[in-house]
Length: 348
Image (cartoon, rainbow, N blue to C red; front, side, top):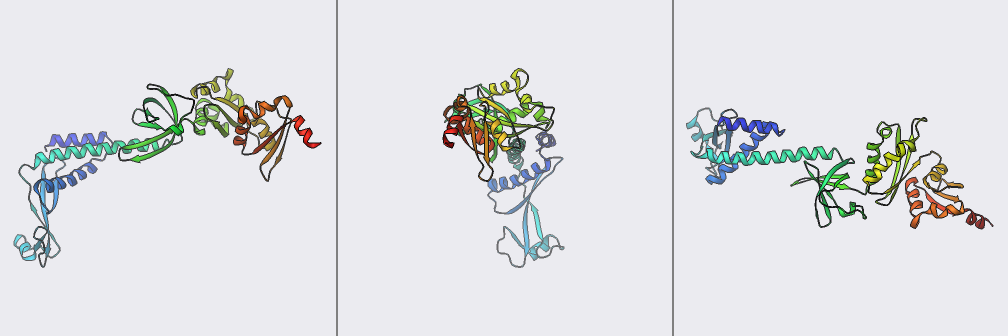
């Protein structure tokens, strides 16, 4: 290997963000294997690769011992003294054994090692980049669909949207541009495996954080999220500034902010409710858009009894119990809903 080869070698390592010394050490280790493989040697050898000139030297190494058991690995003290009187027991004697045509094998081996190391380094960089973005949103393009798994091209890497993380009413096709939520980044032999979700509550939360400046700035806080992906969601919000309406901030002018998120989630309905320190008021808010007459809470059992006007009962419960179910999930309370007439009848 010549000096130009070594310079190109070092430059490439720097460009890929790898310390050149790490690559050189790996090349030397690979050259030892290449020497043993090509020259059938069981010797203990050391390879020296000159960082400037690219010159390669192979040295056989033997331990100085009292009694030689294996002449390929050991040397008697008398034999060592014949080479240099300064050798003592347990010293190592080196003898150059560089083959004449080793340069060609070395160049080929070095190239393979460099390619492998660069690939490993790039995978490591990609892993670090994406593992630091767990619980964040990525935008990518649907590349292909295999066995119901959707593979999303992220530019530097590929993400997998598993069937369990897909919204049941959504369909995905090649070329679709979609946002997804990173749930996990795994290290594999083929590089980082990025697992994403369209159903995770974190997706909805991050979409609001990106769309609503007041949330991004910390003035408005999302306290809780409940989702039935693709159908309906509820989020509870709170404002640290009494002059800022948290619900209004999330809805936006003429509903523009929330509509952007609804469009991204392909029509998923979103109820934005005001969080409250008072559980009764919070539960009442959570049942929006239904109007509530009264809420009685049992703090010990986290159970609440809610009374709504007769004409609001179906709205409070929702289609197939969806509104009540989401409100319970949002607040963490069990909610028992009755109409005014049902409540009066049970008291009689």
